[in-house]
Amino acid sequence: MALIVQKFGGTSVADADRMREVADHVARTVRRGDQVVLVVSAMGKETDELLRLAGEVSVIHPGREMDMLITAGERKAMALVCMALHHIGVDSESFTGSQAGFLTDTNHQNAKIVDVRPDRVRASLDAGRVPVLGGSQGVSTDNDVTFLGRGGSDTTAVAIAHALGADACELYTDVTGVFTTDPRVVPTARRMSAISFDELLEMTATGCPKPAMRSVEYARTHGVRLHVRSAFTWQEGTWVDEEVPDMEQAIVSAVTHDTSEAKMTLAGVPDQPGVAATVFRALADLEVNVDMIVQNVSAQGVTDISFTVPHADLARAMEHTQRLATEVGAGGVTSDDSIARVSVVGAGMRSNPGVAATMFETLAAAGVNIQMISTSAIRV
Image (cartoon, rainbow, N blue to C red; front, side):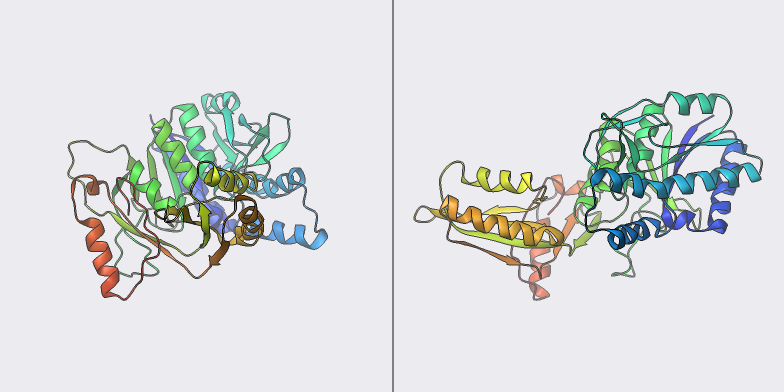
């Protein structure tokens, strides 16, 4: 008997018909002899609708109340899916994040998991039931309801799989697995049967939308096997696991792209210790997520620092950095929101030279100018 955690996203439980299909799939898994823990997201666009309502009633959105509001979507879905399971004879019971034992920090709207104490979930399994968990939620150390952020249901699933020692964590989405690139852009993109944690982590960090990056980080840290697959076709998807050392790796496994960032350049920065620390500490305190960073070679005692930030954070990052430029004696700040990042990812790049050269030749042949370059052992 295997213990499987199955997570279904919003499109997978968007209406009553979809919920009944999910219940049927869980029932088949149980009847073949496996135990199932089910994690569900809010129905369809429910979270967007709740955010819209919040905007209509007030311009003030306290974090505590926003978390209470948003997590209501998952609670609604878990209760309905439980009813669908009971209807076909599968004993089940629903659990909120706090009931399931998810303890988080006090950061509202993007809380981090501190501990998982799944005693009630384990007792439910031992009683022969299917526990159904509301995804993306927990309770803070201050005893407030917290929201794990967008994509947090993936993290909920991986975390409960680790806490229970599950054999696998199946993440059901509206795609059939992880592809070599975005099939909406490149119709010839291929679904991969298997990929390493490191490769998928690089892909999710550079534009691959599913699964959520935090869930992949958690899975890699704790060695939770993932299976990314479709809730609409039920076919075998992509397995995500540790790298097999003696296996020949593809030089390039995937190509990802991201158009959600803007570039900022701090020009004429005094080339002395502490200046970069001052700038990036200030942005961190604003909770602006800085990604790629490139510093030019110093000339005549000054240098330029370029970095990327999310589009949504550009205005406040510019405002704050312009004030900082005067403080640190920099020449000024410029920005460009018409950029895109393209990345090639592959574990085989560690032992195969020439990938970067081929990539840059390809871009040059297409007339694409490169503004910034960043690398890791398996990504350019």
